[in-house]
Amino acid sequence: MDDGEFVTVEEFVKGSFDKYINNDGTLCGTSTYIRMKAESLSHYSYVRSLEKLMVVDIQGSSHKLFDPEIASYELQEDDEYLFSTGNMTFSAITTFVREHNCNIYCELVGLTEF
Image (cartoon, rainbow, N blue to C red; front, side, top):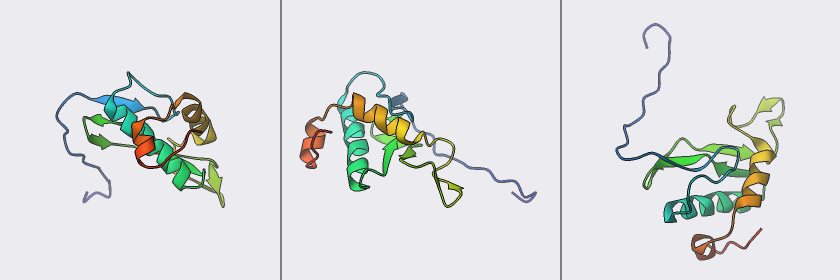
């Protein structure tokens, strides 16, 4: 803005809003195929990062997902906080690992059970 303030604008997403995975790693709602895909994304991100981070806080309307968070094993690196205030660190990762049961989408991308 001209006065030095900043604003963000997001596209309006039609449909019902559903949360599939909370930022603390808790699975939300019933196990639908979209939640299973969200779970496999979280699982994949953890494996691919060599168990250093995980995509969590997955929510949206149908396949339009938005506003994810990153949970990293460490909260800080070189005196800098990683991934903003939504980073629930290893606590979120531990919760997800405890609650997640691998599904067909995990199998399709070659993931194995924790």
